[in-house]
Amino acid sequence: MSAPAVAGLFFPMREALGFDARELTPGLGERIVYTAAETRSLLRGKLVLEKIGGVMVSTNTIERVVGDVGAELAARRDADPKTAEALAQRPESPPELAVVECDGGRIRTREPNQGPGVHLSGEGWRETKNACLIRGTRQMFDDDPQPEPPACFCDPQHVAQIAETEALSVASPPAASEGGQAEQSRETQVPFEGDWRPKRFVRTVVSSMQCSRDFGRQMAREAKRRRFFEASARAFLGDGLPWNWTLWKDHFRDFTPILDFIHPLSYLFLAAKAVHALANDAWSQYLAWMRGCWQGEVGQVIEELQAWQEKLGLPPSDTLDTDPRKIVATTIGYLEHNRSRMNYPEYRRQGLPITTAWMESLVKEINYRVKGTEMFWNNPQGAEAILQVRAAALSDDDRLSRHMRQRPGQPFLRRPKRCLTLGGTPTC
Image (cartoon, one colour):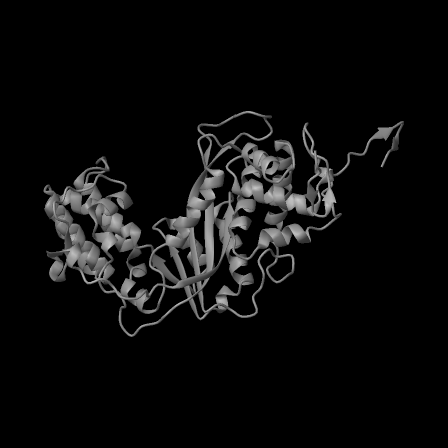
């Protein structure tokens, strides 16, 4: 069998456990890390390396390399952003537009130091923290470039999917018009010409198992290194979870805070269904409220919801979440709490994003590698390591390859030797 070339050296194909970690060249180490980052399991990674790369390595070797590299990436992530040890590269100039978005995720873990197998406390699900930091460009406008909501938010099936609930049976879905009345169909809406939305240039990713306080510091270090605080325009987007806005308050106060429009849309759809028995009435009500928020008339929407609350009555403390009184009260509270972050016409005029679409896409990319009912990660070292490797692989600045080329130490990855004692004399 021919010997496959690896980073300028030749190694014979092995049929047993594969390479020992001490024998890995930098080039092979990079192959292993990228394969582990992009395939769904260590076993699949082993197969890809063998069938495509012509190299046989054991899953234990892949796991060790990922653990080592993940720990190194975490150390560089937490380094002083003013030093060369920082993982992110410092650009020559600050960005025109800096966008920071964050969201939580889920990962399944097992008990540490218990050996192979699954050892769980409960189901083992734990929260991950994820963020994307976008360097982009924008356009600015004298007036709102899109005063009418997009067609997707006027589609009953699409909106029900967003709200994760049953769709309304509307024979001919009406669109929202002036005064909140449904008068024209989606087909007769005038489509928006052009695209006002900001454009992404470079995305970098931060992901961790650590608490929100420590994660906020990680995000701030990344943003400082990339000169986000010097950007001409700055935006911070999140959903209604309190920890998102605590991070904004503690680290990104100079960024424009924006509530992801998808979240109030979901609340308004559920509230409209709660106050109207007929599907057409509920859909028309949703369109009126959604359009009101889209156009910045959040106060008017809250007043109408409060009128419904007065009509229905306040929910008792033991009311079920499905009770219309509870749904309306929850929606009112959500809108009132986030009202200052819902000036969507002004955000569009400034060319800022109004949804966390970039973040939602990223979460799916992270989950592809780390989340699954059959995936269990050592808690916390194994989970933290794979998150660092995956985040680096998903970053646009080639940081994973750069790190693998710049790793300190010998040109081969060598694990520390254990010092043995013979007759009282150390052997090393």
